[in-house]
Each structure stands twice: as C-alpha cells, then as structure tokens.
Length: 174
Image (cartoon, rainbow, N blue to C red; front, side, top):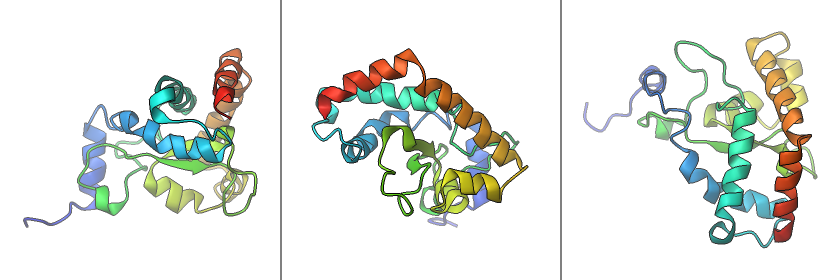
C-alpha cells in the first residue's frame, strides 16, 4: 500500500543487500559528534574549524569497531537496524552510544566512552546499562563475544601513539 512503512524484515534485507549499509552514514557523523565533544570538554570545537580532526576521531573509533555498529554480529540479516521511522533507508543511521551510561555515571562524557551504535542496539540492547552490565546480561552470547573483541580493539587504539597524537591535537579546543 502507498505510504505504508516497510516492515522490519524488509529493512534488514535492504541493509543486508546494500554493500555500503554500514558506511553510508559516515559523512553525517561529524556534525553529530561535535556536541558530544563539547560535553567532553572540547568547548571551543566547531565543525568548520576542526572537520578533519573530527573525521579522524570518527574514523579511528569506527575502525576499532571493525567498521560496524558496536553490537554487530555477522548474520545473513543484520541484528543491528534503525529506529522504525528510518526503516525505509537501506543503511544504518548511527547514534553515539556511551559505554558507561550517561544515566548511571557522572563521568560518562569522555571521548573514550563514545561508540557508534545503531538505534536498535543503543536503545534495546544497551538500554542505559554500562557495558559491563550488558556483558554480564549477555554472557556467553555472540554479542558478548563481539563486545569483548571491540573493547580489546578500542584498548589497543587508546594505547596507541596515533590516538595520543589525536588527543593532543584536540586539546587545542579545550
């Protein structure tokens, strides 16, 4: 019927058949990251002055996630998807999730606490829990194994010279 939203299976199928489904939203992300960076203490940062730097932050975080949403598990149909109002899209619209929940932690607004999530994963898997609570809740599952892998990759990133250099360049915007 005209004007009717596609159902979830159709949305997941369109994601699965689009080779760019997990990367198509990347150009939109700098403008969504800047407000988070300001809350992280980079109060002078702006998209015009710092676009390459903001894009580098996104690229490094996304790479540490294996270029997929935080809770992504490989399957024929993705287990990560958009909010229902975005089901007509054939790509993931990312949200910034917080590994330490903003609802439980006063120190959650930190750069190393941000992760790229699909709406489904941010709202229905993490559901305002800290990442450790999610791991305990889903212990032994494929999602818990995915979290372990991403956290290990993030630890490697955050210990790297490249990340320290990036943070030093960001410091100019404090």
